[in-house]
Length: 223
Image 1 (tube, rainbow, N blue to C red):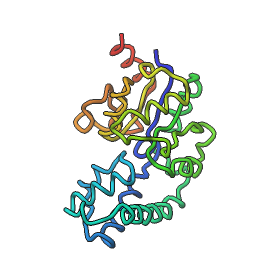
Image 2: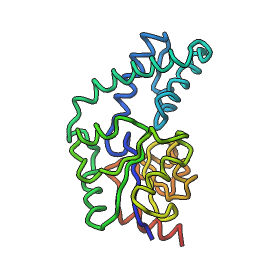
Image 3: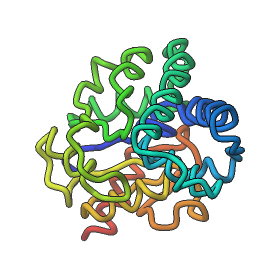
Image 4: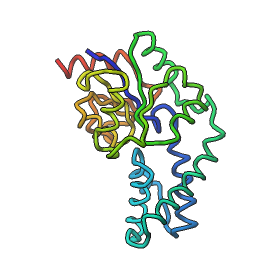
């Protein structure tokens, strides 16, 4: 039986991924002379800021060119660009179907928490007007490992006191689905099966999410 739900933020509740992409693209072009393509950007989704920078540096063959101090400065510059972009977000930026789905969960007394690698998650949730329901957010500063490690999902379940095997995780990134599965949770993929084959159930987009479909799939797979 499902006891609770754990949400990723980017690509599930809102699309901040486009702002991350824009900020990484601008910073990398200006400071690193590296082009961040949409293909490269796919490898940054759901990955922490410092790990994302390492992915970009590796792609440009420059992973040995910067000290840790310089890398922190580059990541900070990217974050400053990103914060400017997200400061204009409103409730209109909530992805289709998510408001209704959150209401469904609330009406069915399912506890909810947020497992986002973003230090900006509380600010974004506030801008979206969802703080009243999404008030349990993992602090990325307490994490020792990034996705695909299960740590962030385990901490998110701990925040709402649900056993991992009876917790549902929603993700739109391969690293996130891997983390949910590694935690022993039930994985809901936002994206087609071809993109997220390891998910237990897939919805092509957020507007397709159905609590009934998730509950049925959980009962079918877990029993």
